[in-house]
Image 1 (cartoon, rainbow, N blue to C red):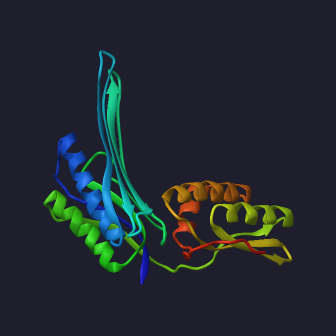
Image 2: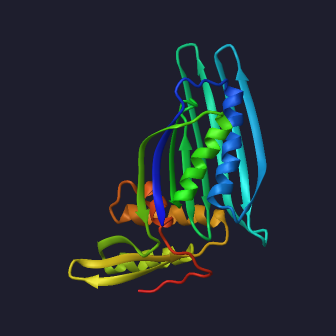
Length: 251
């Protein structure tokens, strides 16, 4: 069974310097990518660290990117780690995130430790029970501590057609279906008394750059259909779609 996972992994009392936090995040990113998409070969393509130190401002930025390629050398996965802290004489701030995405099939993982290795907020979909446990164990191995698990949700996830709206105008629905087909998302419209219901049927994308474009177009459709949380909703819909070699539109 596949799940949509949401969980907080906590390591009470743990504290690491910034550089060690970055190394821990990089090590877990590599492990998590291999757990989420073991069929891909993951390679680090970018490692950047920038230190800012002036009389007025200070800060450090770390960025790491991994690419996951299939046996035919197509880029079907991407993992990105971002960590930044900085400030000036009056305030300081920090942000951190790990994001992993794949196509064929679509999968997504996001983790945020808020630049504090004590707490890791993790979402991932779709994942199996074995992958959920493996992600936790991998983080425990990196940090050399057992995690306290809190707020865990494992909602069953099924790859199937996804509803966009039940009340579109016919002209809007036709345009949306055409736009979605142009980025590899097959969709269909069904006339009802309230208007046209639009369903996403499946997706077919050659690489993660196609996924970026598809998310933008789907987000625009969702926004025009009246959804305010269109960015998050687009991501959630895409990981629930069946995959395929080629997509076309129908209505």
